[in-house]
Image 1 (cartoon, helix red, strand yellow):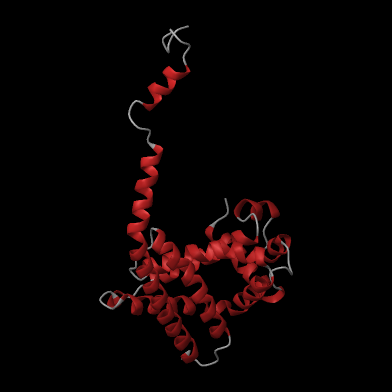
Image 2 (cartoon, helix red, strand yellow):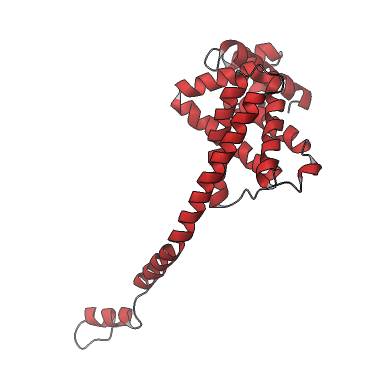
Length: 233
């Protein structure tokens, strides 16, 4: 098993190659060469590019979780999430070239987009958790996926934001969170409206699946020969 330092060197080499050559512009052998490790070591730790990216995102998640501001605990959920996502962008700042290359690749490759989306959803679930927002259940799944889309839009602005204060980025993030609140409010209203209908449908289905008392016995008797008991051999 590789040491933590070797793993970090591999991920750093992957990010460097990603920024320089794009997602499809290099192979895993190039990562091994850049990191100065054997192919066998690389294979044991990172079977492919997605595994390298997963390790990178996990490290970013960890740094954001470590940086949670306890003074934000009493703030509204929206403000806590805003703070968490800005911290995430700060953590990503040294890797803008890699992020830019990844965004280009995802926009051109739908299959890659699906792979990356799964990793991004996991990260955004942790961002919700960091903001003190429940991240389990169907509603949280919708929120996590919506947050992936919203954050990607903010990243597009952030990549070209030359202002040290990131005014455009903060404005874009605020706008996306405002839109998210509106859509989640609509979703909650629809959910409350549909809940009694769905409950009745489930109850009706359960009644249809349960045969009336004695139905099975009557069917067995009908199928038995005349004058014989249903269990006759």
